[in-house]
Structure formats: C-alpha cells, structure tokens
Image (cartoon, rainbow, N blue to C red; front, side):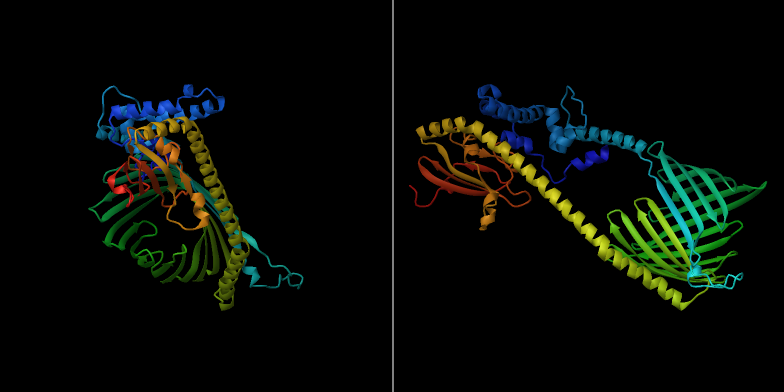
Length: 553
C-alpha cells in the first residue's frame, strides 16, 4: 500500500548504502563505478574461492555487491534510488529506454502513489460503531416496600432500561465520492425502533454535497451541502423530509461557521420544522484549554450553556458543563484519560432537573465507542452525587494501580526486551557478514601490503571504527578493527572514502547503533607514520601531509 511505501522512505536518509558498498562518491561516473566493481570482483567473485566455505560466503557478498552495481550502473534505477532509496526500487518501476530527469521521475512517482492511494481507498471501509446500555440503578438509593407482603426486598432491583447499537461503514467509490451505509437499533423501556440510511457524498473544490435516503419511523429523504466562503468560513445547509403515516414532515437546518481568530470559531445554526430553534456557539481552544459558550432560543427548549475543558500532558483531561434553560437545568462534570495507545476511558456525572443523577461511563477503542449510562436517582440528592463522584475515582485508582499499570509496565518490558534482542540479532548478523567479508579479503590484503611495502607506499597499520571517544571499559565492544577492509581499498598508494555512513562498506558494520561513531587510522607512507581521526560521515583522502605525526622525518 502507498502508506506502507511512504513509511519505508526515510526523509533523513541520504540513500548512500549502495555507494558505500562500492566505496564511490554519489556523483561517481559510470567509469568509476565500473572500475570499483571490477576491483571488488577480484576479491568477492565466487569463482575466485575454490574452498567451499569461502565460496558460499563469497556468493552472498557478491550478490549484495552485484545488486548495488546493477542499480547504480542503470541511469534510470540510479535516479530512483537517489530520490527514494530501496523503497522506490521496490515500487514496481518500469525501465524506459530514454534517460529521464529527476523531475520526470518525481512526477511518475506521484502518479504511482496516487494509483496506490486509490487502491487503498477501495479497500478502506472506515467502520464506526457505538454500543450503549443504559442501566437503571435507582433502586440502590431508593428502597421501598413492594406493597404486597410488607417485606422489604433484600436485593436492589437493577435492570436494563435502554439499549442502542449503531454502525456506519464507508464505501469509497472514487477519491471524491463516498457511499456510507449506517444503521441504528434502539430499545427504551420495552419499546424498540431503528433506522437504516444510505448516504452519497461528493467532494468538490468548494465543499461537498450529499443525498441521503433511509427508512425507520417512516421514509427519510435528505439533501445537503457545504460551501467554503473565503479562507475562514463555510456554510452548511441540509433539507430534511420524513414521511410518517402518510404525512410529510419537512425540516431545514442551516449553519454558518466563521473562524474569529487563530483559536476561536463561531457557529450560528438555524433549524426550521417541528422543533424550530436558533443557536449560536463560540468555541475557544488553545490546545490546553477549551471554552465553549452557547445560547439557544427555540420552541422545544431555550437555554444558556457553558463548557470548560482542561487538557494535561499525560493525555488526560477534566471537563465541566453547566446548562440553564426554561425547561431544565444541568451540571455535568467528569474526566477522560488515555488508557492505552488506542483506548480512552471517561467518566462523567450528570446532575439534572428533572432527569436526576446519572453516572456516564464511556470507553473508546479506535473508532468504536462503548457507553454505559447508569441512572442513579430521579431526584437531586447530595449523598448520591458524592457516591457517584467518589466511587468511580476510587475504582479507577484501584484498577489503574493494581492491574493496568503493572500490565502496561510488563508489556513495555517485553517490548523493550524484544527490541533489544532484535537489535542484537541484527548486529550479530552484520558482524558475521563483516567477519566473512574480511576472511575473503585476507589474500587481497596480503598482496596489497606486499605491493605497497615494496614501493614505500601506503600501508594501513591499524584502523578502528566505532565509539572511540569513550573511556569506559564497557564501550570497548563498541569499537571494531577495520584495518584489513581499508587496506583492501588502497589503490595506487591512495585511500579515498567518500562522505556518508561507513558501516555499509564491506568489512564494516555498526558496532553501536544510534551512537556517534568515528574512524581512526594509523598508517605509513614512505615509511613515515601518519594518523587521522574523522567523524563517521566525513570524507577521507590519504595520504596527507597534515596527517603526519610530528617528529617524524
């Protein structure tokens, strides 16, 4: 999928691994690539090693070497690799006869990405669901005589008052067109109902429009649309119609949204129909604090409301809402916290006149929501409010301390252990490959030393790669000897290492992933001792007069 492909592309990578394998510059010419490849074939070609063990090692390393050369020697593949790395090579590119520019490569990549996005779009359904069970627990605090045998019941009567299930699934037709199938079933006090809706939405440059048909308590037919008005405002209009018992019940909803400043948005909503109203709401959100103030005037209800939300760095939040109307008053307060990476838990207490006291529990897992409203009392009582507030807090603290935190800590330890083992195995594998490469280099190394010594040329005496600046004994294992690999790179009494990470050079590996590494070389040139230390990504060219050890003649 395109998203997986995007994840493979590291924006911080310079895609220099193949260049490091051949030990050439990123702008190396085809002739330089060919020369480097031929020179390494002398060392790593399987036919050069009659010994079965070395031959098998050579086959593995030569395959890696040949793959790097086949990519870099092909202008088309090389351009793709330079821009997108190995992920681009795995994306299914077609080799063309003429040479394409990076701009053309990029354009083709964007087209390929768009195609893959469409494929993913076809597979994505984006399911959203809600499951709610309302519990009537008023008998816990309102015990009464059953009126028949004069004996008070010992067990409170707790029952399910209501249940609701809703589900919605998207079916992307094209990038801009989506069909949504949604439905809901509900049962309250023994009376059930439900509906099913089919929505078609088309997105355009200036907004969107949709058509909705459904059945439930009659036939539903709705049309609506959204239009962006300038950069900071838009409007939404929706015309509703419902046919019930042969009667048409029309309705209209119109909303205007205006961004007032960088943190504040205003909403103005007008509803026409059986429950006509006009509502204005202002939302201010700076990322840490959210304040919502609203006023509604209507036939069904007229009220003034205010809501405050405080977010914390621990991905938890506290919220409180007050509502005062002609027909009702309510105070709602609660908290929400992130339990796991994809799960949220919230609890709220609603104190309302005339509905009473309700404890609302909610768990959100991805796009699925599970609600558990518990009705505690039909009247406002301070004692019940106290229990509704304190008991959930104590329960959450107990479960969090005794179950959730130990479980998460154990999972974190197991994950860290797995990651450490994976990194260690990767390091061991890289070490084995480097040691195998060095075994194949021994004959070439001896020939190079003899040749350079006979003419007073360049001899690598000692070379180390890794965490060189540390004085800790534990960090000794983070330093590797790279004398043989570097000597085998010497040509005509010169050693040239291009800039970039060195751990991909054959015979090298990363002894301390994620830590700063350096390369130190002690060498002789014309029987005079030299030494140089460079950062991992620096380019190196030896011999140099500046590397000469003082006092040497």
